[in-house]
Image (cartoon, rainbow, N blue to C red; front, side, top):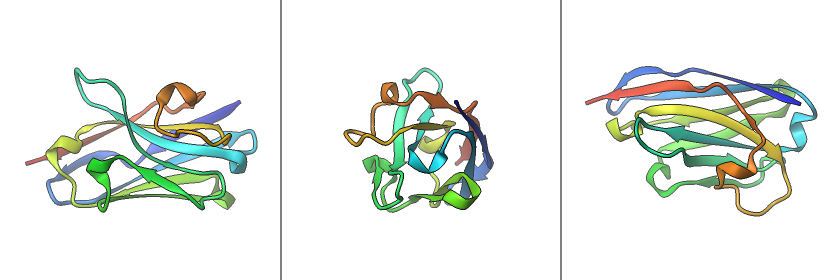
Length: 125
């Protein structure tokens, strides 16, 4: 089992920044790929970013490229999502997710077996 706890959400004005954290406990965190997803009201959960177990590769959805950065600290069992230049359309509940890193496509929520409870991010215009 892997337990994930997100933190760092909140209310911010457009153009501002937030850093989300996801603390993991349980199984060997270092061998898991980690992803961030988000879900806005009335919309499906969508991929935001992912990082391989080694941290050597990162992936982003087009709408956040150049603004968001995913990183991980294996020693702290924590993955981060630094969000800059936030826009109102970034408003959503953000979820951290984990899966054994078997490669493939990191974009699909169904491939992740472990999820956090979510943290609300609200960007005002």
